[in-house]
Image (cartoon, rainbow, N blue to C red; front, top):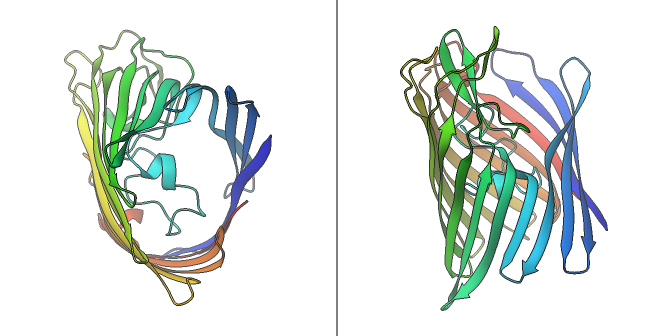
Length: 325
């Protein structure tokens, strides 16, 4: 049995708006029986701007450890598509105080899924080959004002449209410090609810995800980049016949210098949406001071370029304290 997780405290100061403090606590529970079964789950406990506390299940799975190269897990899991969501999003791992553009709610990168997944890795020549494959309930479409505003992929129990999504990721590490990844998913989705209530018998439409990622570490440098897109097709006869594509990419470089207590980070990202008010280009620059390998103070500044007058166009200063325990 192991209790681990991370905690975050931060200050955000957007241009032309009031600065504010925030905090979150993410305990992770691990329960292992021999080398056969692992139960794992993460809770996200946050305080919102009204002072209310919300608790969400980030993931919760039962993992069957079948052999050294294969784990079969069932429940709610972080999306295995791409690198950031499944491996880098915890605040004490993420080298900047914010996620790349397009990796948030209704963005281009899926968040989570409820279903079953097989994952593992094997040695291949002088490198290592990794894989994951899953089938799940799939996302929901967020509909507003007669348009698909975004793809809600937080992971839902139940499957109102009766359609599933299958997908996965393949990775190859030809060198210990170099990894290349290819992700994809496909299936069907349908509009089952709008702001006015349930929608019955709306036709299904195609849903596809495609992603590429790469990372490389050398001599104190950590270099990585990722591209991912989600796309929903048109559906004749639907109450919202037009689909859309949400795609994003980022490139990031960081360097630990001095006694490895200080770290500099630069990231550039570009998120494109069918809705101009959501699209955003961002240059983020940060400096981190490592109190310990798993505890740090991060100061970041974002230069944001979006639709004029929208929050996506406001530069931001962020200060964050993150601790992984």
